[in-house]
Length: 576
Image (cartoon, rainbow, N blue to C red):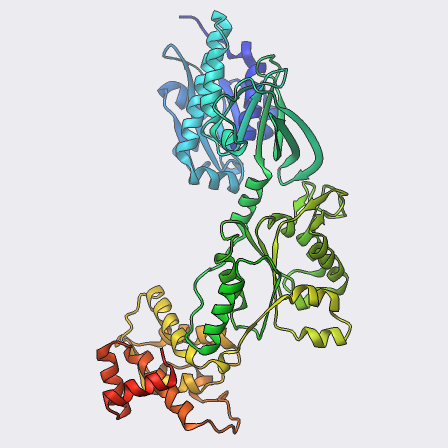
């Protein structure tokens, strides 16, 4: 039996270990049968050549059993009991695979996570990693065999192709002339390559900016040009000369969006005339590209209005990016909006950052609490709206924008203009399509709709059975002035569901103190017409009992009128 010596191909193994580490976001370690480290990346790179006989308990076990080992609790696993580094283990997980040639273990391959992020990535896709490590072990075995038998490099090429095909990141392998030798499915999809992509020439050039974990490049092939973020690894081989690992700018933005978007895009609830009119206006203007300014008191649901516009627009399948101008410190707001390049200012992330305007390109950006934006930034926002380009801090490159802007505020912008705290030209640029989110006290018909909506939400959330809400409670809710608007109503219903007993009845005892004591009842002396009061009571009764024939019979009985009279009044008042 020939003793295969991994040391003979140590340089090749190290090159591919570096590539694998980049692709899979893990550290890589390869040891031979004698437990000598042949290759390593990151933390293990300076330890290449060390004898691990006194601590390689996992590797010993793999060599003896020829079994793949997965350890998700380093330092606590039974195989780690005798390890001298057990109490100071730096690993978050380890996947260890035997490298086998002709049923003989010639070494061990380890994929090792050192961070919680890499552990989360492994937990999310364990099968992908296991397939990946098996392919890499097979690839090293093929390299070893090729070294001794001088077989064609095709075996290793196919093994590498199979390995990278499991990764979400796009991977291209070019020869020394820049021709495509292989690519995985992600690269083929992101670059929109045809089936005959092999041997096509790709010209790449660095754009000089760093974004996230990679550099920006342009890739040109056929008559196409794509902008990507990633890295290029040079390999010492004519046929496999360069390894490009990347994602297109579009995919990078989509990934950033997935990590930051937390919005609930539920439907607007309400049957009042004001809500119906607002929904009608939203339907008319949703497919426009004009800027929208949403005004209204705090808690009126401005965020829900802008997401409704987005969902009904031509950009519903593109990104929706929101930024709260009041929640971010002034010193950070500019970089959040416009982004920056490496070294743009003291304290900047060395990798650079994509700004929210650029991230929202081809989609919609929502500038919440625009009235709190610093005056010095307002001029820059105005230039973006007028010129439709953005420039990252520290860069001279103008990035064209195709975005729709929606802004919202609970401030009186006209008063702020008089005080010199808001630019009038920015106000008129934003206020192309004004939408007012009316306070809840001005749309009482919505109170019951929202109450039942929140009752359903929180009774399901808390797994409590709801039976009914007593009329006295409904009266208190309808009389209350709701200074905190929909947000206060939601909080109140959540409180009531928590206080609700096993009978499933919401009674006066479940009400929050402010509402129970009527401390905030609207006490103005306006006298309402009897017809309006009658209409409101009919609507309230219909909301309680429903609009079915049976429900209307209950309503007529409760109001003390005949069913024919009820139908006549429903028609008279235009009640739906």
